[in-house]
Image (cartoon, rainbow, N blue to C red; front, side, top):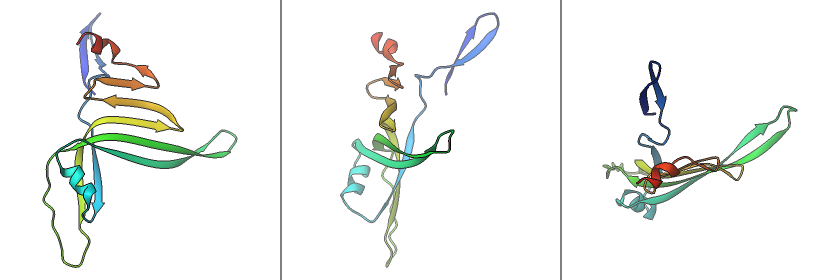
Length: 134
């Protein structure tokens, strides 16, 4: 995470949470279809990952938690795809993440939208001031 240096009773470096490094994800696809064309087509595409995980409380009771990540992605480049006779092609694509929204137990944990300058964590808009001066 980027930091800012302050001179207050000596030097101090603090993280700047609203200045983010590049966010990337990768997707692996088996075979060719319209999804491959969407991901590699140069336009932004929406992806959604869903999973569950077990939560165990202090009494040892288990509960299944639903998680979901919604991403808006764009391909970094068009990759070379090798095809081997008799096998299904496996296409792995590295994608730039433009928007990242994460839900845990149906509660939004964060929303990072680099194109609209939104940075929200647990419902708190941490980039409101920066947007107001743009």
